[in-house]
Image 1: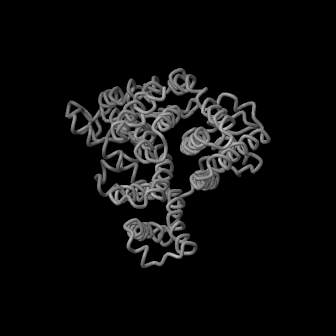
Image 2 (image 1 turned 120 degrees about the vertical axis):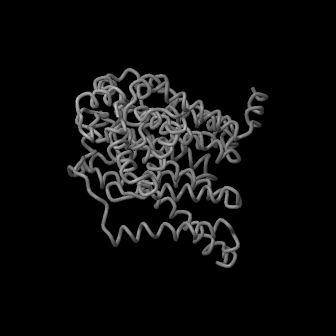
Image 3 (image 1 turned 45 degrees about the horizontal axis):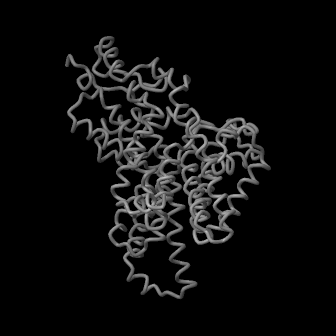
Length: 454
């Protein structure tokens, strides 16, 4: 067993990353294959992203706002999907397949990214455990709004920002990766507003160096990481200035009922942090048990993962800030939570769950190799990994058997089928084509683009 672990740990991180990427992509197909079987656009993928690119062009659309804020990352992914469709010379009607492939590739690459970023900090076999646990993150029947959907990957940019900030704070001397990391953080910030709060931590770390380590600004200016951070900061000031001077974020009427504060522990701690440990038994929980489980994780971090305590604090901070903004923008989300009997729409929580899984796996890793109370530490590590893993068989098939998510896809049909129907019914220059998830959702397209008789 030890020889096998040594061999695994000696694997090239880049090759391992590619293998994990492919594996995760396959897992996502296993969990929810229907976007490939009934390929159609999901809501904003067509009504916002595709529509804007078709009418205004790709480059002008990149910095277009949605609900008052840029979604640069989403337009970039949509552009990649359109490019892939052109490279493979397929019909426009096949474009939803490439949207699906692009969304799942991004998600799969993201859950595999720690293999590249943290291979010098965490042993490879634990990174593999992290990838598998992340690939099977519990979505509880909401697979249909996540897998194959570019629009809802905006929540994943929170997890990407968390990983990149965590990497940047530990790899300040790696000059080669700085440009890519800071470019990634820029894209995160121009896609998901919460990323600003995480990027701010980078500047706090430099302030800490100035105040406690008695470093001078002159010394910091000699560090490529600091110069890159300053450039990134100046670039990110423009969207803030633009937001302050030209308007504010648009408020949606969706889930706009007043927030019920009595459900805060359920939403902020239970559903966002502890949930990966108790997916199958969440409906048996209450505020006291949730708080005890959370305190148990904190105790494990303080006992055996103190050297990485800052990562756990960063994780908690990211989840906290995101949830504050979530309940501010969607206060009515509390309606999905009723004494732990509901779990809410997973698209609003899976990024927090991924961050929690990363933090919990790191606690388990540090505990497993700790020399302090080793038997207790190893038992604790194995227990929390098993608790997260136990739902995997359920997670692998719940999306495939969820009739509520499958029924609309079958009823609405594929984008290609709907194009054929629309072209036969209407002779207008612009035609309405039905998209997912309900028949009220449509995209208006030029006839000469989609109808074969033109």
